[in-house]
Length: 99
Image 1 (spheres, rainbow, N blue to C red):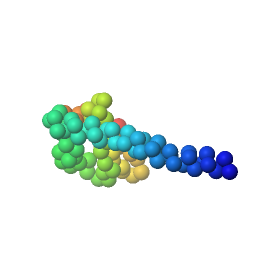
Image 2 (image 1 turned 120 degrees about the vertical axis):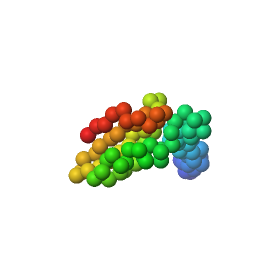
Image 3 (image 1 turned 30 degrees about the vertical axis):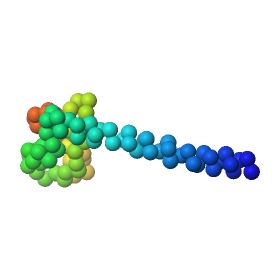
């Protein structure tokens, strides 16, 4: 009976442990919102308007923001290969491509 009580107590605490982890994973998005509001970085849609036309024939997967580097990484796929385009989030300038 004591084991069941201990298990129930542990299960009651579990949601409190999970919620902070869920909020922590949104840190990059929160940082991006703050930087955008401050006018320090361009919105992802503006970056996409410039880069997507240059990547004809590729399927666009989506952007990822790196707050430490202040860059967007746009991901593409073509013929089963993944391609990345790194863009300076402040200027919109392409700073690198990888395959």
